Length: 190
Image (cartoon, rainbow, N blue to C red):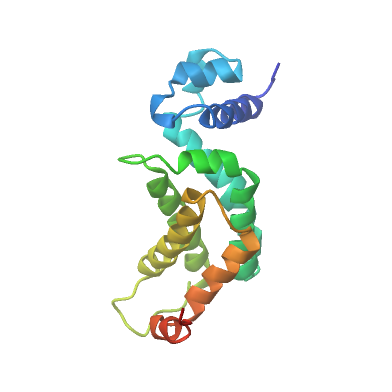
């Protein structure tokens, strides 16, 4: 039996992950989650507002938060690779989430959390700086890179992660460091 609030939250998160590989999130009830975690239903609401908040917490704690020290040390490529590796560790879970659509879609959750992560990073590293073009904002830049990162990650996840995280990171770095014109020029004929 778990003792602390943190232990109960972890049990709920682990139970949720186990359920996700068995049933779609949309069909899952709070009772299903609490039964799987071995706690009573009201306990869930002491930790999460809804089942989508569980996804956010898992994504943040297990995928995004571990990269913060790398970002703080300007190790951006290593941070991106670690994101892909963290997703790959729970491949079955994240692949099951890729089918979520609509208002609380997995795509929306990933994009919002990636935007927060990159926005925080940029704000810390651009405190006394400004863009030459006044209409470019830190929030805009964070959203641009978060959406590109989310697009690559979500496409990979929806295809059941057919390539290893290292190869995906190479693809991402290639696209981010080359113009569209360069990418087209480097394409090979069939």
